[in-house]
Amino acid sequence: MTMLNIFLLSSTSLIFIGLYGVLTRKNLVKILLSLNIIETGINLLLVAFGYVKDGEVAILRSSDSIKHIANMVDPVPQALVLTSIVIGLGTTAFALGLIIRYYKTHGTLSIDASDEEEVMQNE
Amino acid sequence: MKKDKTILMNILAIAFLALLAYFIYTVTISNDIGINLMDDNVVADRVADRYLNKNVLDENSIYEWGGKAEDSAANIVTAVLADYRLFDTALEVIVLFVTVMGFGLVLPDEKRKIKESTQLLYNWLPILMTFMLLVGGYMFINGHLSPGGGFPAGAIISTAILVGVLAGRQTVSSHTLKVIEAVAGISIFSLATMGFILKGSFFVNFLEGGNIGDMFSAGLIPIFYTLIAFKVSAELSGVYLEFYKGGEEHDHA
Image (cartoon, rainbow over all chains, first blue to last red; front, side):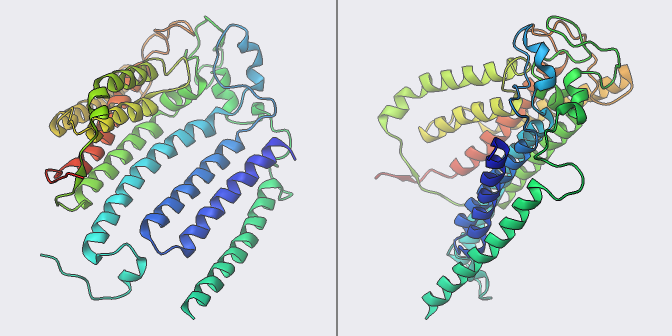
């Protein structure tokens, strides 16, 4: 069991815990939380792709650390994950706005409410 | 009866997902063709090698401490994010802008109850905010030397404003935030156009690099990070203020 195995195992389990939540929960907020768990798992998976055994942080700190440049971890997945975290934050805010609107239209957070075609009329 | 059905569905979902997870896990370990993750993949075989040695544009670029390279940021992740792949980052800022704008559009206009904050938070707010703004400022100024950068800095600064919102003080008006955001966004793209005019391609780092490890190094990266930090913090604070808006009806509980 290497470190990479642990990373892959934990990220796949996070993804599938999230998928389980999406499939079985009825509450929209809980579904959104599950989607965020999936996102965390995928971010961990991407960073794990850049894993190097006994690697170093991809930052130069002194004149000494330049000698280890061949031993540094892959910086590209880290940069991509930074992007995906910020996008995740924006989409989460957007989804929360949609959920607030859903609650206002249906009067409930359950996804079953959208099956019934009769929509509560406010205004 | 209905409860039995839910339990059955849960068990089915667990079984299905466990099967799927097993297959995906085995494929990530090995699928017998192509690159195998479990082999010793050295970075020298990947694209990242060019980024690490900083010889993407200039084959003879020598990367050393205190020296001059084509990109003199000491933090290589920053170099990738804010120089080599800046198009990616700039378009990401646009995506964030669009989602935040859509959020404002989707959110229904209504009065929401907001609980009044405690006296403790209200009085401690200036001290807390000072420290948060200091940390945020340090993050984006030092983004090319140490872990950090524009996005985390923006998140930290907007958290400072969120604490203000929680304490019941609106520290900035949403109009100011819109102006900051617009100015930062326009500056990012005018710098990009300036690179096009001066060097012939968008988002090129046209400033002189300086020595690796110095405060003033890496050319345009600190400037871009400052702009990105302001833009991201303005956008995220806009989200928090949007939640706060219409909170005139106080809940005295």
